[in-house]
Length: 226
Image (tube, rainbow, N blue to C red; front, side, top):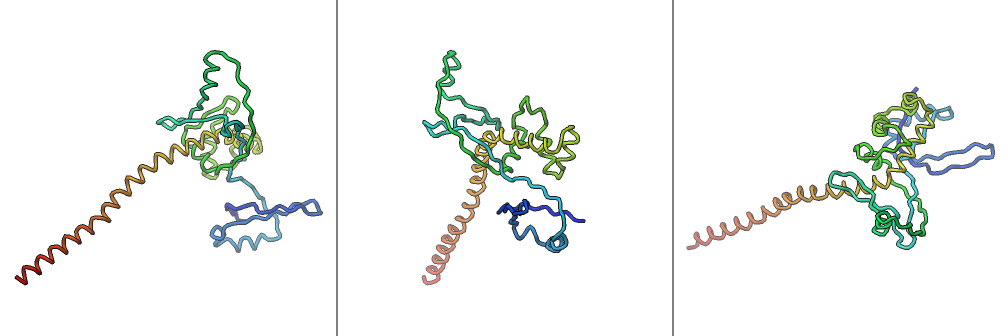
């Protein structure tokens, strides 16, 4: 008995006349090194397969007048993401005015699950009353190899239910995770530039020394002629 784990692409699903579905998976070659013999052994046999998407699909509401997201966010200096209300909406709230109807449309977007997971693990993701679970701990344990079945058993729910809950939580925090990731990258960029500056100075320095040495050699030659 053996266990194979790899990240791949679901390339094709074919509906067969028998009612079965034939699924084609494309896996990077480097992930299969040393495992091809195991695949040959199971060929034609039965196997338990689990699919876990590496992207998070979510819907975003767009203002059709501005073609921009209806909800906007900003990040404070501690990395906490806050929703920013448009000026008109803020005035409506302050003065109790009726809300203006804004024409909207929904667009489907997707983001790498890794970014959302890192945001959750940062401890900066919000909690929701209707999702009373410690998703930071759940995501951490999943990354460490904990099974959905074990996590679900501890929470007293089915493995299918915990998958639904995690997916729902990820979808809710996606916009915040995207803004947080922008903020994080903005902080890392100055650090990288600061590291590159001394390196550039060191590369320029030998040229100066070389010209100085050349000048000294010329002076010595002139002294010799004199």
